Amino acid sequence: MHNSFAAFTTFLRKDGFWWVVTLAALTPLFWLLWRATVGGLGVDPVSTINNVTGRAALITLLLSLACTPLSTMFGFRKALTVRKSLGLIAFLYASLHLLNFIGLDYGLDLELLVQDALLNKPYIFAGSLAFLLLLPLAITSTRGWMRRLGKRWKQLHRLVYVAATLAVLHFFWQAKATERWEPAIYGALLALLLLVRIPLLRRKLSVRSPRTMHATMQAKRILRQSE
Image (cartoon, rainbow, N blue to C red):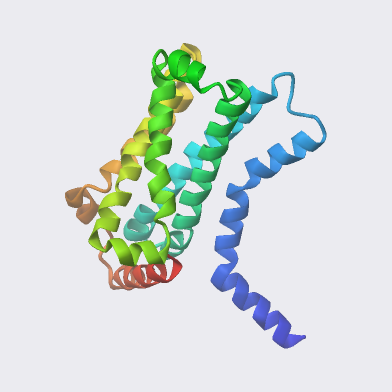
């Protein structure tokens, strides 16, 4: 009994944070599946799925971008253990968002999609481009691809900043004028997350205490193990 409890506490200490964050990030998907089984997606299920998956994709993408500053600026090294998972979950939601739009909203009519949506609605073009930028990042998120690409891997994955910017624009442009406060908040958060990545600001904001420096070194080791 004692050994089982010790093993459980070790699991919580080592992997508990990852499980909590991952399950929390998947909650919108669980909610959609549950509502779909009981027929509770409302009078316009396509719109409901579109809204839930779109918001979930953007929020989890922003959370993944927040992991590095949380580690380097505040010494919260566990944040890096969930960065990859949050990024992949964001891509999952973006994929569901796109499939819902193409399959249910446009009935897989690609000609209509190109003529009506991509050419006449900038917010759809921005969202589609954001997805296309996230696609290679999801594919190359494994250790094998990190080894193959070497230094180019980090350069490639900087495209996430462009993808996140396009995702915010996608949300802002499609929102009604009275509802643009929400994407504006996400845009402000993204701007902050990008600003703290500027080398000069990052050095000034990083805590340089021995404890934090040790935490940062541990965080880098954890990140290498989690990739």
